[in-house]
Image (cartoon, rainbow, N blue to C red; front, side):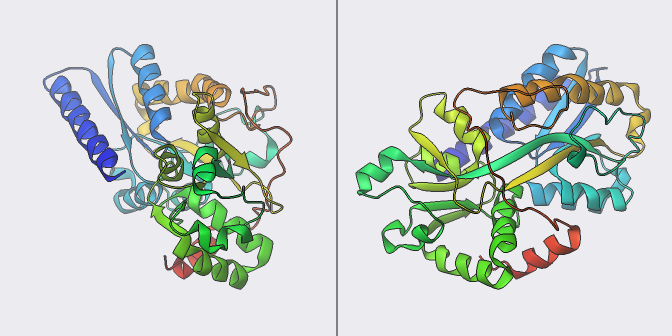
Amino acid sequence: MKMRRMMAGVCAAALTLSMALTGCGSDKEQILIFTSVEDYVVEDMNARLSEQFPDYDITVEYVSTGNHAAKLLTEGTSTECDISYDLEYAYMEQLAQAGVLADLSAYDTSIYNADTVVSKNYLIQCRVGGGVIVNTEVLQEKGLAEPTSYQDLLKPEYKGLISMANPKSSGTGYMFYKSLVNAWGQDEALAYFDALTPNVLQYTSSGSGPVNALLQKEVAVGFGMTSHAVTQINEGAPLKVLYFEEGSPFTLYGQSMIAGKEIRPAVKEVFDFLVNTYSYELNEKFFPEQMFNDKVFALENYPENIVYSDMSNNTIAEKEKLLELWTH
């Protein structure tokens, strides 16, 4: 896994250098997008933007969720970033309150489910649900029964065989944390993660980390995104998505332009494409959980009739409090 991350870093550095060299001396308009979306979506997004805007020099820069928000809060409207893409709503709200995001009042929000429309400064980018994902081959190799509850995962036979994203750096990790706080209460949820930690191989920095660990057979169980797991299942991976009685945790991710950048025609043109075209494509290809009023997409092997967790009280103050209490 470490080697895989190292190689990914080398490839990313090479790509960045290549793009920089290509742009050197070029009169192409440059646009910088910060995103916390998963790598397979970044790949698809890059392909579509290159196809749609061959005359623009567009850089899609992956930044982990926590760093994405912190960097924009620190740099404010003087940031080189033009578009913030795939940032969890609580962080988007924090940026909106700080005056970092553009006014998007002119965009038609009637196309979206009502529960996704909460601000004039950002629009829904996707709704992402999570599940407890297992590698059925690893379970069989280890002689482990398929877990039926979160409590099952505390059993000593799962030691070192569980992966979860760190809530401090990943919206995916936080949604699992928050869902159990809402289901059981703060103290019981914190006690649960204290008890679970000896069985956790790694709290990953990215939400894709647990599924990647499952694919590498480093773990048997991962707290991950349903969409990521289904993408891998459809490619033949021996994964299965489980939901326990607490339901599927979910979170909403938004997109916006940085305040002041919306006056640049190229930035607005790219953002309009992301909102009016790519959002539908993304929902259809990767994240079919409903967010539009006029479109409902189905994806092969995607679970149906999902019962969602209680994700209420997902405020900035609540998130900051819970992250302060997280010690793993």
